[in-house]
Length: 452
Image (cartoon, rainbow, N blue to C red; front, side):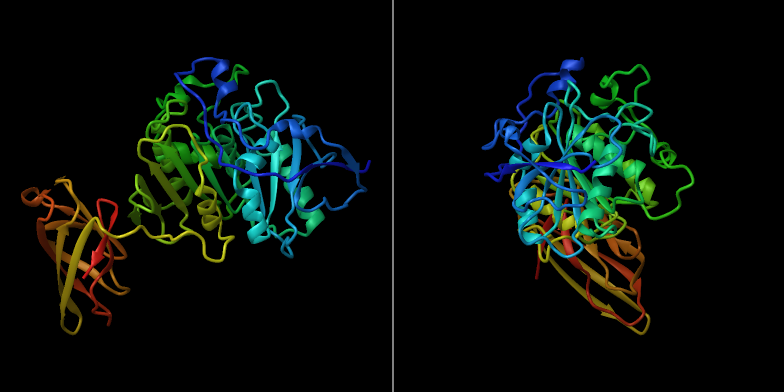
């Protein structure tokens, strides 16, 4: 049977904003989970005229297209596709997964991923739930098992159809979503680590946190952030979805607001524990910074834009994700843009002066830190990056960890208070293999410093 397509004319796209309030403790909570305010284009445009296409026929460009008969689809999902006019040869594929009560067309019109596809040439796939709650299945044993016969199987079929039809690059398949879609992003990366290169989850929960055995879509303990496990236990749940798999694991980017009252903030820490364990990297950040006011970004396993795990905490923010500009940072994390938003925060929280005095195989460094903010710091951490080949062997004025690479210096008991305008000088001794320059990339409590 040949697939049919249905196209929706392209319209304005705005950020998805949640319009939720109050604690949810029943299936009503699931049905409202992540519902945004009205966007410029509504889902009623889904009723536009259908067109027919033969097997393998490509969809129209610059329009949202419903693809039918795309493959194995045990839970009757709908597939919507957006192909830009300037689609790249062997394009990347980004799966964009909606919130409860949402739809593929709502994510198309309410997020910036289609406009980013226009810019960078990737294809966007928008899965759409047809069950009454419009929530993705992230709780059943079938969903949490590779090939288990639920929503993840249908989404993988959408990816396979897109790869076949457009000769897409199988090494550049990604998933992102918000709320229920964020939970599904965790599930997809756990079930199909050989399919997805990376994921970005907005206001979600760890893989298998929402697991139930009674057929319910809702897990109150998980939603309330009361399920706590060790990193190993969380990691084992991911590994158990595809027993025997020993290949590379997808990178993961996590976003969460500290005031989220739907999927509460402790889930953010549990997700971070899970994915750092899956990747076998330290739970101590390799780098901490603040790319935007109120944001704290921690990177694990490496310091660049494509770290194995990147976690972004949003101070004072509720369940209202994805907001404007965030999608561009997702694309940067996926590596699909040429430049992307500036990866480093703006300076101004502190001022640092660093000097070194070296000999044949060693050196000492003196680092003077000034608090240029307006608030007294009662406890501080200075982050910096040592030049390659340098290893700290001892220090004063602070404790230093780790000894090389991205280092965090934590205040001593006697100098923990740093008033506005006040300074503190710390130092260390290090071995070197030839490079004797001072460290760089300074941050004070996660905010970038000006080096002088």
